[in-house]
Image (cartoon, rainbow, N blue to C red):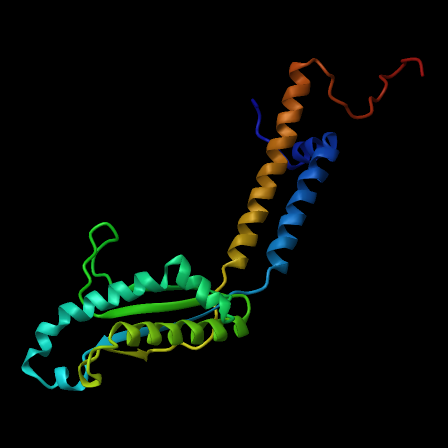
Length: 221
């Protein structure tokens, strides 16, 4: 447009395409309701440490045992995230989403597992589901680790321990930022749709409605 859009021109543009404006606002209202009505998401995180048994920890060879510990950490994490294991967790009531991520000092493409540590994260809209899943994952992890070392003397077995449990907490939401962005997008969409329809009518030769004409002096009424 050659001239800048004043508030009066924008208001007239909205009135000319009131139906389209109402449709856009209705869609935006539906999206807003969906965002507002979505329940908050909760999560619980903890660190699982794999360590050597008492006899190995007390020996001078404990430093060289770091490689088997890291290998066990990675293997158990991958095993727990496999589909069969996830099905087993769900079978005992662990319905929440969970993940075990090995401690990685570099990237996924070139991992560098420097410590025998893995991070357990459980997420769900239901705190009760998180509690059940958290216990199910840790219980299954302990049983898998014990079964893998069934032939190893107890004092030489790799042990898993839990530290840094965050407890169940609501994830920090960004709903206000989302709603703010939605408002901005709605304003832009309303203007763009109305402007598009106005230009389309202009190209098709449809006359735009004008205000009431005031007859000139002396003109017949």
